[in-house]
Image (cartoon, rainbow, N blue to C red):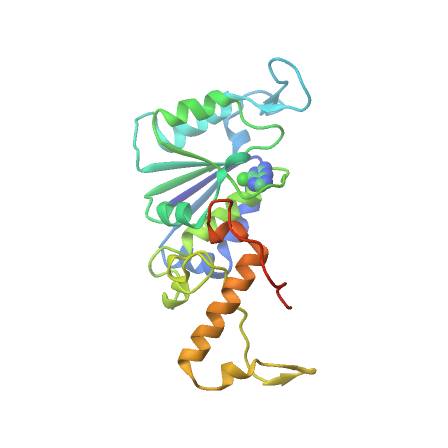
Length: 246
Ligand code: 6GU
């Protein structure tokens, strides 16, 4: 998979060369390249923004540098297997299923906006040629798309076969299909007693059935308290009957 990042702060993506993602890069599973949007400006000040048409606060990213970036990185020919990701707080909620879908893309180009956003014609232009995803991480505002692009990258790349050593750890975790859409149960390791806190007895019983039942119960309770929307139901799930102990 080839990953390109277009940003006025291309150094944000240096972190892709460390940890699990760095190993995926070293092993040739992904090819990551970050680009300075200002490469595609031609004025003395390397201007990437301008005032919004119609007025209002803040600045908008000009379309021209983005168009030239696309020309150089992608050409102008349509290709539905090229995915363009535009992180934005007004995007579709980014979910595990989208990460799974993107994990078998041939190419993903992340377009990281700053200021009040990118001129909408850039999204229209890209949508006519490639598969565009405007994605939001959640209901809060970041200063730009860079940190969101890194989060999306990590969620996608770890699903590429060969990136994670033990693929079984992918099926049991929160949000995967294997957990019926429940949040993960709490986990423990030795020592059995630590600073007055004990590992729940059932986990030391060796009784696999009881352990599985306990974990399922804890998953349901935590999900009911923290994310009732995940439990479904007509009004987005039931309220929890008991608070989750921590
Ligand atoms: Cl994807 N971008 C920005 N700038 N802010 C966000 C976001 C994305 N998701 C949540 N807040």
